[in-house]
Length: 65
Image: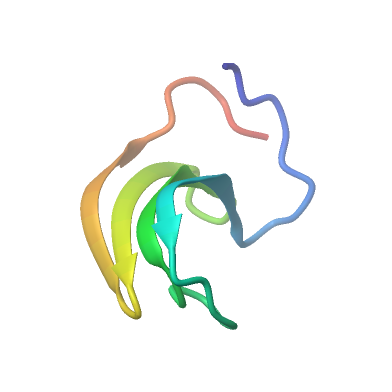
């Protein structure tokens, strides 16, 4: 996948995996998230269980406009 543009200057977008117990609000689920942060152009992998636990974080390769 090549990320060529982000429509918002902040926030994140990605995918959830092995998700259960969904609720209202950020991190209000049990599962994993992998995605890109629009304000920092970083790729993040983490685990949520009512709170956020980062597992990995790195710069997105290439330009992110």
